[in-house]
Image 1 (tube, rainbow, N blue to C red):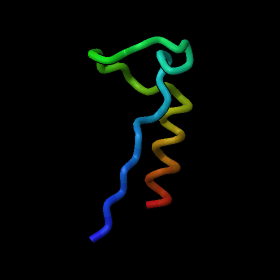
Image 2: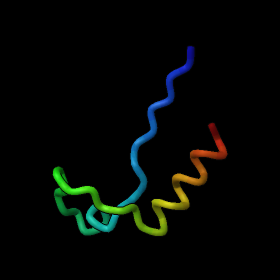
Image 3: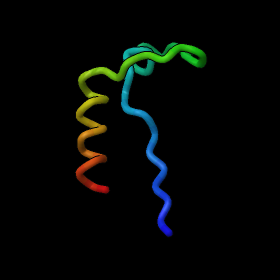
Image 4: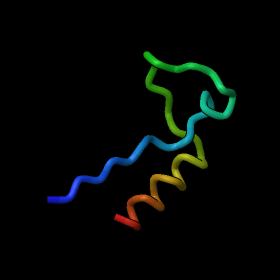
Length: 42
């Protein structure tokens, strides 16, 4: 069995160095590209 652990993509809070522990913020354009790249690799 293989287990892949992939962290979420980039959000605007990440860029602004804001803590976002309880909110579900959408990933930004860079995060979308990161997710697509991860999907292709795995």
